[in-house]
Image 1: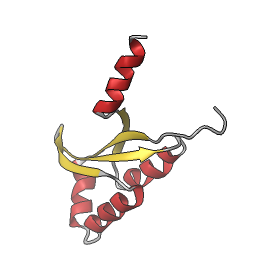
Image 2: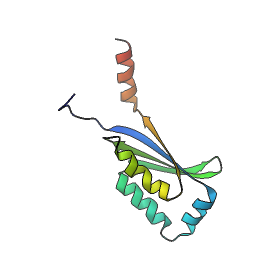
Image 3: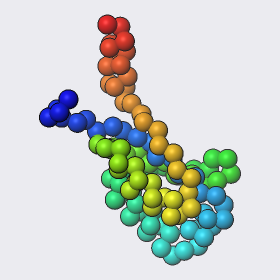
Length: 104
């Protein structure tokens, strides 16, 4: 495996911000700038914002090449007061490949 090309893995980053922390963030004039900066820094290919369980929730689709990137991706969200989850995800083509390899 040494010398082989490393394929990036796509992750969904789910960040839930409790009401109090979310209120502070929304009232802060720089709150939206923080989120915009975060999206640019992690090179999110998509971002979504919604309510889940009564909390403000953000979801970002991010590609990672190494697991050590998790810390730098999560830390800014933790600093906003968020609970953070990482979920590896596949595209339809990935699922097709997985299905083919399982039939061998």
